Length: 120
Image (cartoon, rainbow, N blue to C red; front, side, top):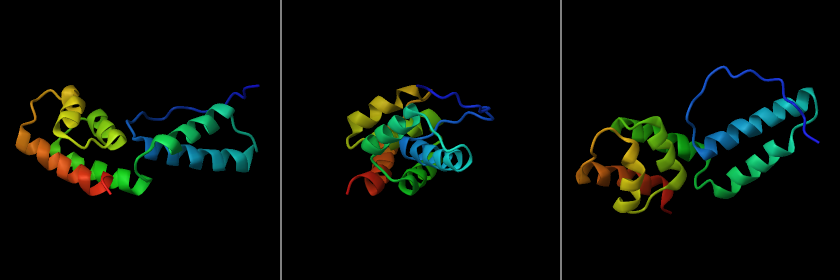
């Protein structure tokens, strides 16, 4: 049985999987404190995000902040945080949404930052 949630969308923003997981977990805590029930979809979404997130929320936010220096679109930054590319070819695949060409030197700088957070 599904439960309808009475919510209003106030803003829309591109967020990485770890950030989405954190937001959903906080939402569930508030929801359970007030009404005591959540939906199975929310729990399955949190489970999925837990399984496939490569960073914790603080690492994801820090990586995103550093990527902002490259003037990348939010959706590109989110894909980089979610996938944690390890090669230039992988990174270039994620840069296709950019309206400009990222030269190899800049792409390598981006990878260096990604390595700092994703490659342990």
